[in-house]
Length: 259
Image (tube, rainbow, N blue to C red; front, side, top):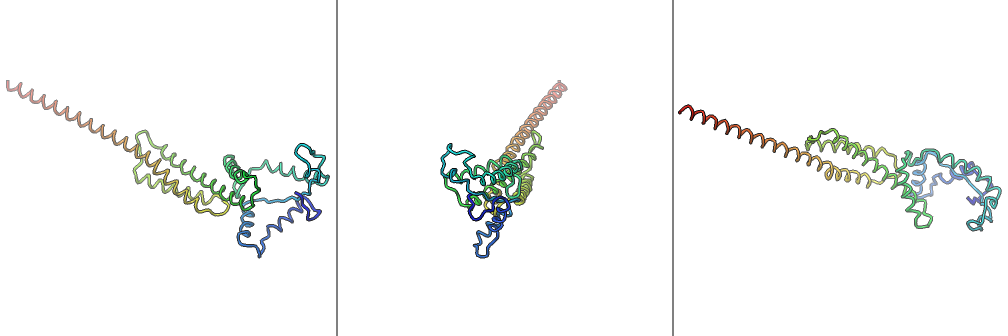
């Protein structure tokens, strides 16, 4: 909006302007070149529309005191071309980093951006980019951890009421599921590269395994082994009583024979 570097407006003029902005300059520092590259990699479709100023009445007016009729005619024309395009695109699934996001993920991104704008100061583009990098990694982390939990619970669902896994089976299960979770994390499209999230995935998976699933399995094992020990002790007691009874009956028969 408020484009003043020429009389060409709309998407075609915006495309030319965007091409110039996104063209890597040899004089630009490496961080800005990487910034341009990451933006182009992360979005399947980038467009720019140039709009003139809405006019002095709009710019000088206060909220509630201006109407659509106060807009300059040229601004109204360009706005009429832009708005239908924006509304039409709103009906398409949202993608970030080339990946369609779910409603829950969209909420996470929204919260991330809301924190940036909460100060009331318009953030630098790099701040928004860095926030998106964090958000895409958080989303990949959540998806990977969800897979880890789902896979572990699916394995436990195969157990009967009195069944449990051997310790080595649990360890192998953890390694296999963790490997798949790491694969999901690595294959999920993300902006930038933050190794700390992969490290957190491994540490969190290990913690959930040892403090949750492994402990639960050990509890199942303890309960079942205790039950078996009680059953064995009861069986031995019954056998001993039966042998004692038989011995007493034998002695009684011998006494009867002597009489």
